[in-house]
Length: 158
Image 1 (tube, rainbow, N blue to C red):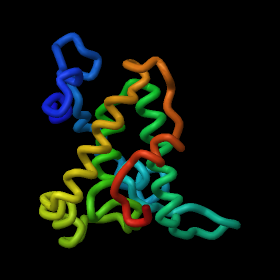
Image 2: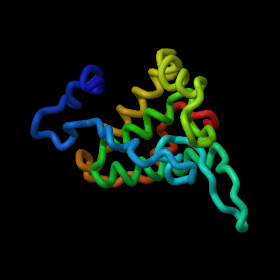
Image 3: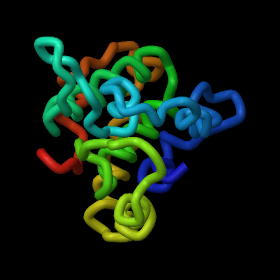
Image 4: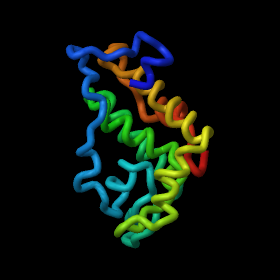
């Protein structure tokens, strides 16, 4: 919706495969602390290295998020790709570790109040516009995780 304000070619119609754009179910059963679940929210999760559990680095988490976004884009799942891209540019996400449980007050402030900062807002809008401009259903060209990583803004380790 916001993208159509900046570029009318992104306006949605009832017959557009991009409608509805939000996938509110993205959060269902994705709050685990393993790398896959955490990366869906552009956060670092646990991985096993030499049989020992350790946190992903910020860069590993964003690489995982980029892979998730590319996979969703190539599968025509705009809502899920956008969800991760928005989290990428949120002050409490962007590669930070996810310890699980109920989010701390700092995390929630970053999700809600921190997003009012124009820098984070601009980064989120850039991420959404880039995804919409490069959806394979529009371009007929698959995207790679490397392309996603190079074009997302925000994150704690950019």
